[in-house]
Amino acid sequence: MDLTNCIPKNKSDTDAVERAAAHGFPAINSILPDLLEWVQDANWPVAQDLFPLLAKAGPEIAPHINAIFEGNDLGWKYYLLSWLVMDLDPDVAELLRANVIRMAHHPTKDERDQEIDENARDVIKHGGW
View 1 (tube, helix red, strand yellow):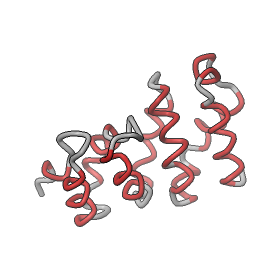
View 2 (cartoon, helix red, strand yellow):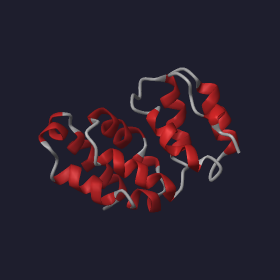
View 3 (cartoon, one colour):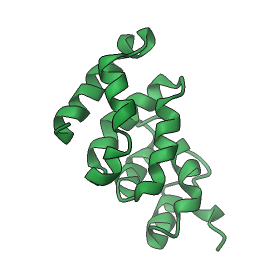
View 4 (cartoon, helix red, strand yellow):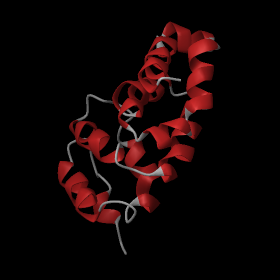
């Protein structure tokens, strides 16, 4: 199945998100990395439509989010913690637990400066970890 028309072409391409939502999961699992790229900035219109869609993803999304959490894009980490992780199914969120706990209790200086540690602690409280 060709899902290229389900990947946004620009930050306002909410039609692509509607097409992705129409296919649903697990059909769109193969484009999860592409969709996650469009939530790097929560101010983009497409991001606001993608967060609720991505929250419905199964465990297949966890490795992609963990890779972001292990990377250096502080804004992306902040937005994922603020807008997505708390809305994931608890079983999926559990797969992110190690990285969330690390950011909460042993953040890098940059993560601390960007208040990512505070967001991670909020996720921990919400998840009851």
